[in-house]
Length: 215
Image 1 (cartoon, rainbow, N blue to C red):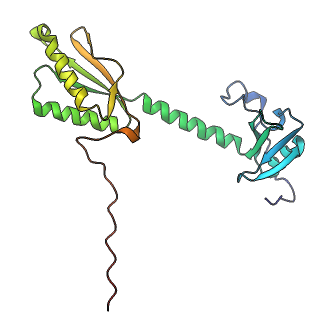
Image 2: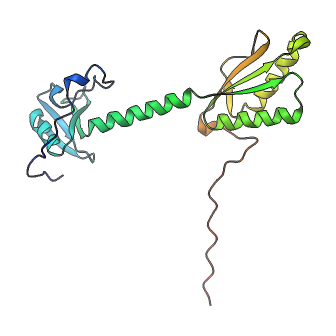
Image 3: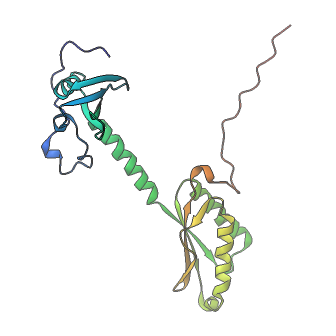
């Protein structure tokens, strides 16, 4: 990694005190917060730059308009990487936000006690599609009027639905009767364990075979 002749102006390390209280990555030492007098340095491209005095390593990072970040504090000496710490924090927060957003999406599928087979399968297909997208799915069956005298039939409907969806998701707990309805929450299986029964995932079509050369 070639060193620039002089450091660029206009940037200070990601080390400002007024960000500490709100920084979810505050425990990660970087720049002037690194306590060890020497560190083993890794370049932004992942190359080993050897052991340097910490002030020299910080100056090197600043010359590239980047930060010196401690990535292995327990090592002797600690291992530090030159990176854009602000960008790293942003990317990690974006990943966390995406995971929370996906986890918070709950889709509801409602059944009735005397649901027709065609309607039942349509709802199961919708549930399968939601699970394939990683959503949680809440199955609900509402009893009407005197149907409460036949709750066992309602549990049969719910268990049939769970059986149809067992290759895509598993119930967080068994179906439960709550007032005049039965509820059960399904969580999607890991992507590599999901097996669609009612849908086919689209795959890129193979290119046509090359024409045989003219003789």
